[in-house]
Image (cartoon, rainbow, N blue to C red):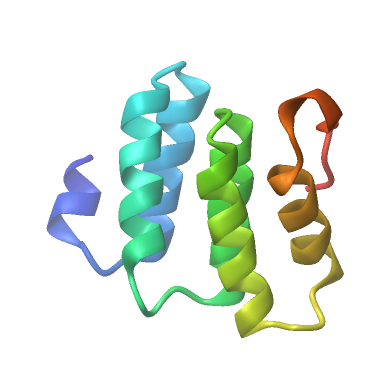
Amino acid sequence: RGLVEANPDNLMYARNLANIYAQSEKPDSASAVYLRLLRRPDVPPGDLYQVGIGLYTIDKFAEAAEAFRKATEAAPKDRDAFEMWARSSRPSSNRLATFPL
């Protein structure tokens, strides 16, 4: 957490912190970091995709869909982002439990 606070512009540190929170079963903390990243205007498509994966993993499907939508706008040929956008936009009864990394 200290690295993110000392380096607020470092996307990798913030994404890693969110991943650690998610793996530590702290979805609220992970979500807060992912959503801060999602609001930033300078996040590259690959990072948006990873933010989407993180949000999808903690069952924040609407937010994940937003991350994947932004990723597809920035990289319109990214098939994985389009697929995950579609998956995260489905009703929960139709959602697949697994996804590509």
